[in-house]
Image 1 (cartoon, one colour):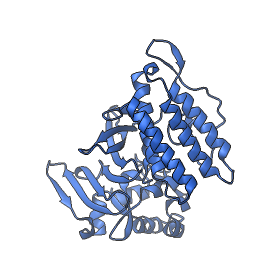
Image 2 (cartoon, one colour):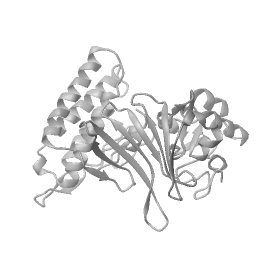
Image 3 (cartoon, helix red, strand yellow):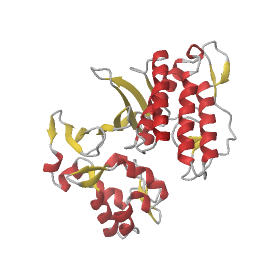
Image 4 (cartoon, one colour):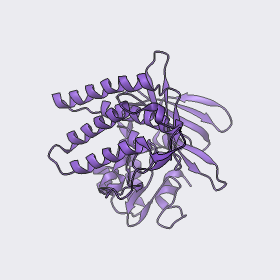
Length: 338
């Protein structure tokens, strides 16, 4: 789904991809559900379990119960539908402004997630139809356009609409500077079919931002819109740029990454070239979702390379940390040109 699940923020103890039981789950970890839903104040000032977190707990329990079943994926999609039904049935007047914003935007995210399912068959078509039907009821009760929510980790999402009323889910991440201020890292925009059509990198050297525009439903980059530090801007044709020029804008080829792994003597170069990020470590599987193509070759944006493990303790994260806490790994520096 082009990285949508990497960017959705968390809420309470159970809401958010990969977040359950009050912590970030390790790959393959099944939560034990030792924490109750988060208690928050309602509009009446009374402390109670937060309604969206109650729904997310039931959703996570259904996901966990489905693991290992022959129809695991179908059961988990049904859990997504049940969550949407729960949102549709909520008493919106009993929610705080924060709970309303997250619930409405969470509904948009799940509609986009289900919309991205591309599996033939009546069962899956019925699930997608049910999602759209439930969504129609939710948006009549709560208009998500203009709503936004940010968590303490720097992830945020918001909803916008174009001139024809088509909705888009905008997801972004940020990092915390030593002075305590947050600076943007990347943002991605998806339609309600879960298709990425815009991604922005805010950390390419010498630029304010680099935005890649996609044709919805395709991973091919159509254009790059660059805003430079000096205030100038331009639109570039990606296939006309060399690999080195693309790297200068924070776009790294999978071939180039594999080559640097080998040159630096880190293990896994061959596995990476044949199997992508996930071949090096299960923790990297999410990064493969962020790949796109330019001129038939696969690329990733630099700021999508979060928690990348190259093996033997070597790797990088979005802050450049390597094997030693606070240090920069050779692989990160080589790709960044540092």
